[in-house]
Length: 457
Ligand SMILES: *Cc1c(COP(=O)(O)O)cnc(C)c1O
Ligand SMILES: [Zn+2]
Image (cartoon, rainbow, N blue to C red):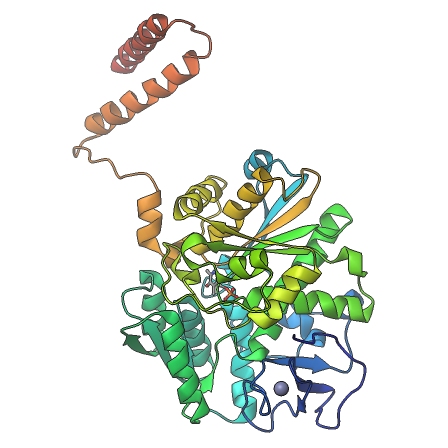
């Protein structure tokens, strides 16, 4: 089992108090001397470790976004657009429907390229410069490629992205294309793209910036820092629970690391750590399976399917870091159907918060766990929404209202919306009218009066 215990011993390999540690065998490595993504000895996942861990006071300096937290990061500044500082929306109608003490939505779709991936890339691309590699690569369900392309362009570097053909939302491909990435469409799924890009990276062809790269997770930790600070400022306490969509489980791993570091520095106590709660689509839910069945690792799902393409992943590479995160914080994992995801997407949109399908899995998961009694009525909850509505315009159009054809004249438009308005009035009137007949008569009467009035103008 992975050892995620943070230690005080700074190994001789450390540079400026920063080093890499294998979570499986404990081996330590210099952070930037050589390019490595996993442990030389056992191929286990690596984690970035620090001799000095900050408390909240250390973040009070100048600056904004991800780099305001540089005391928790390996550099003082990165390749930045800038990123972070995303809103923690109030969503009173969803809060009421879910029946929890408080609900906030951390909308990561408000980052520069429209997803939380930017937080990881601002650090990851900086590391690529530090180790002296100028070709960047990733496999992606879309958002990683959009972010990598933009940050690669910003850093004046070459970018290669491998995408599963036909399975990436239009907005994301458009971003990668315009930000000058070379887009390789692979006839396979995301997990197969990742296998290939890992081979390329192992041969020294490119610097790998999937969430297997431990430095990306450092940037993504700042989601947790922002949530903790803002929630405390608003309520005088930290949230009981964070519900988030899970694909490769990088964010789950990053948030858990954020909380472990805050506990270790004494910024929070163990019982102030929010319960990490993962939401996956039913058609791609290996993490949920592992949590429910008490497995030490996830089974690789060879065939995965969901409308939420950003989390259409069958082999979550960060599971060894994320499964302990869910278990140790007292959280859980839940699978939601595509229909539930779309319903939650509409619900969020109804609060003015536009998200892509994968993002809405968190809110769908909250509803489901409330119904099951797993999440309690007195909890304060934060749902993470990971990507912007415009990422997947097709899904948004399908979930939303259909356009209504109307003739090219003001009269025709008035006629059209007039019929609509009278039906609104009728619905209002139905509250006071009792019999169905009265309802119809009343409705027709109101509609008639309405037309009469309008024709006088
Ligand atoms: C990448 C991504 C996810 C999955 O995040 P992981 O950290 O891989 O679990 C979820 N939603 C969106 C929109 C994403 O882009
Ligand atoms: Zn190892």
